[in-house]
Image (cartoon, rainbow, N blue to C red; front, side, top):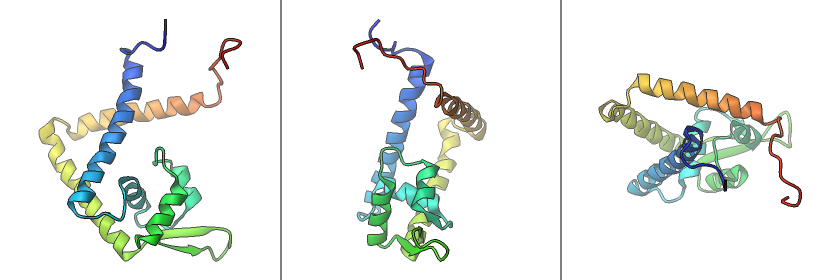
Amino acid sequence: MRGYPLTTPYYDAINLIERLHRQFLDVLKVELERANILDINNIQSMILHNIGTDELTVGELTVRGYYLGSNVSYNVKKMVENGYLLQERSIHDKRSVRVRLSEKGRKLNDALTGLYKKHEGLLESAGLGDSRLESMNHVLRDLEEFWSAQMGTGSLTLAAGEG
């Protein structure tokens, strides 16, 4: 057998999760372009929204881990340069830099919250009511817990000469 069969529910779930993440990023990209907001990208807008009212270090943002395939430090730097984030050195640890939303960042965060609420309002008519979403979220959290448990198992083995 070459590769993994492409029709198992597990393999389908892995591919669907990846596709959905990319598709959501595309939705954000289109919405930013429609609003003529061209100085921040979709991933940066997700980071911004996840900061919300918090004040965090880049390390804390990275640990939150929502930013598939992105360089959090680079994205934070760009958002500071474009006026979406304010950064300051920690009073207690001069090596640590904390970031929070600027007024411009808060306005975009409010707009993103409005977009998410608009989507929520449309979900029911798409057959995606709260109970279906809650059920899906339960399964996704179980899958997250399963993958977390796999991190230390080291179960991937290669035949001699393949690695």
